[in-house]
Amino acid sequence: MMLDTYIRTNAYKTTLPDTVVRDFANTLHGELIQPHDARYDEVRQLYNGMIDKYPALIARCVDAADVINAVNFGRDNHLLIAVRSGGHNGAGLGSCDGGLVIDLSLMKGIRVDPHHRTVRVEPGCSQGDMDHATHAFGLAVPAGIVAATGVAGLTLGGGHGYLSRKHGLTIDNLIEADVVLADGTFVTANKTQHSDLFWALRGGGGNFGIVTSFVYQAHPVSTVYGGPIFWDLAQARQIMQWYPTFLAQAPEELSTFFGVKTIPSVDPFPREIWGKKVCALISCYNGSAAEAEEALRPIHQELPPPLLNGMQEMPFPAMQALFDPLLPPGLQWYWKGDFVKDLPEEAIDIHLEYAAKLPSAQSLMHLYPIDGAVQRVGRRETAWNQREATWSMVICGIDADPNNAEALAAWAKAYWQAIHPYTLGGAYINFLMEEGQDRIKATYGDNYERLVEVKTKYDPTNLFRVNQNIQPKQT
Image (cartoon, rainbow, N blue to C red; front, side, top):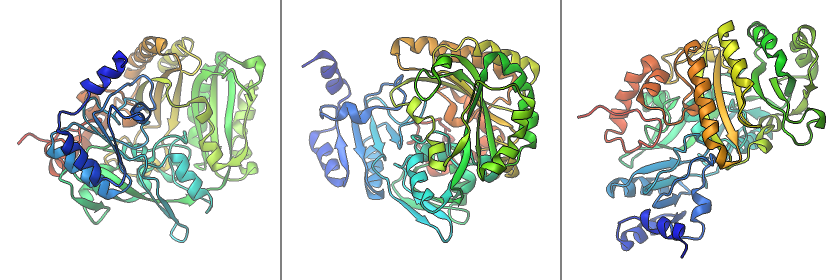
């Protein structure tokens, strides 16, 4: 037996009697994976290749009954519990060392109600799964910009993307959720049942229970006009100075985010610009090409000619999946984020300084617009309360090579430390690594104490603590 296999199968093996583990396995309609199983390494893998964790048990649930059994088993046997849906969490909080992972990735049921324009989605679905199901009916739910993203984590963190300016965050379109609580009970949370829990689920992360299904309001979306427009990085200052005014005047059907990045050295990008550092405006217009071109007219009239204009008509699921081929699972990721209100010259100087020092071809900074409909929801109406922001900023150090992990993290941290004084202080919870309680409190601001109250009510022992943790009051 190889040394790493020996360490894995022994250091992370549960100390529970084999009969207890076997009895638990027999309660599941899904499967229980242990370190000695041939598929263990495959099943435990996370999206972020920088994170490597070795759970003692992985319960692959297929229904709510499996989730209830897994919660009860983990709690009664004093196991550390992590909950994994898509496994896309940047900080790797869908897993843990030596504990029980409650894996929801096999729970992929989706049912669209075209009459009421609603969709019920189980937590193992990706954003792409949901887009596929709703697109057949000419509908879509506001979500993120990468189809591989898990719906559950995206939603519980807030969820912003191409449709947010017109239709709000993902949580603004959440109608109800079925939840397994820490004591193993099953409840439905909405505006009239367990309304305090429903409030907390909308942005409070996985702190309060395990959601086994979400019901969303969907909106008419079919073919969109979208894609990237790239300029040389030398033109980034002009574009960043111009961008806030353009965004404020743009129709809400148009979402345009700004980014700094490197042109991928792959087709279909023209070979003459492979590897070139650029700034970009990536847009999606929910409407006709003619309407989109009218909304985009200022780009063509007021900015320099671009290196590449990739705007075109496409089905909305294709727009959502545009970046997926460039971001396969297993890359090294280091995330930092903040909410941003405006872009003063001093901030632009910092962005340009660190854009010139991108540590790899896949590293980036994006400013996602969260104005429009997002700002028409009160900051106290959901746990996600940074409604006054204009953008959600993410800084990502990304590379395939594990040997570059330290450089990715160093660049992202230095960039964030320099730009942080020009932000609103908190960050989108899905863009955090493990950064401590001060960052979590800053993210929730004056909603934090109310979240503590809900956590204390529904999870008083902090069973669900492998997350961006909101700690209950000590009794």
